[in-house]
Image (cartoon, rainbow, N blue to C red; front, side):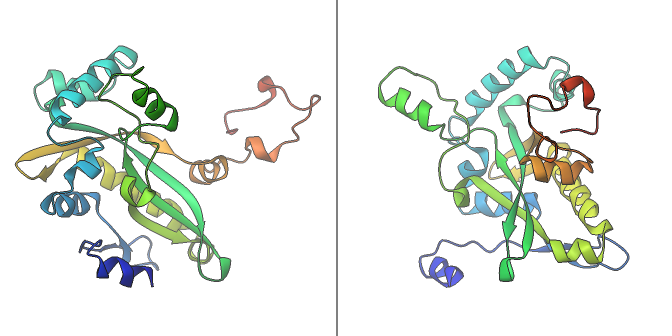
Length: 239
């Protein structure tokens, strides 16, 4: 039903669905390459959606972003490329991976993998400050707006899939990481300019982060009382 409504109002784009062989038994698994999505949105005039900022002002904003980022993370690998002249920071797009759990057919568990621009339309607090004239900047975080417009689907894995084939979950994570790495190393042509997308990190709630990292303990799996374990009692398997 939702698909038909979006099609009727010309709110869908035709993005290629790629496939990959995750394990010996799980082959031709569908996912969406970030590079394909970026190119399609750029061709439709929606490049700003994946950049997180207007195309016209993006070079200035990205240069300032990386100047500030360097003050905090001066040894980040990206600055070796910038200093070597391999990448122009004007076209270097900061992004995050995003993973979360969802509900599928008959309330079955589904793990959803996405990515999003680090910059966007701001937070509720920053929007209020701008309206009051207390905040003057062109750079905002990506925390408001419908997720249809701010996060981009990479793929999903149903719980029944990795229960039947335990290696499929980690194999899909590797595919996710490899594709995000590709749009950084190789870049993507977006209209007249080429952009490089740098993944600064991945966001997930505690249960999902524990699943991704194969951690045996999390904050939610211990007794949270005053007499419980102190930080010194928790080893590196704890999230």
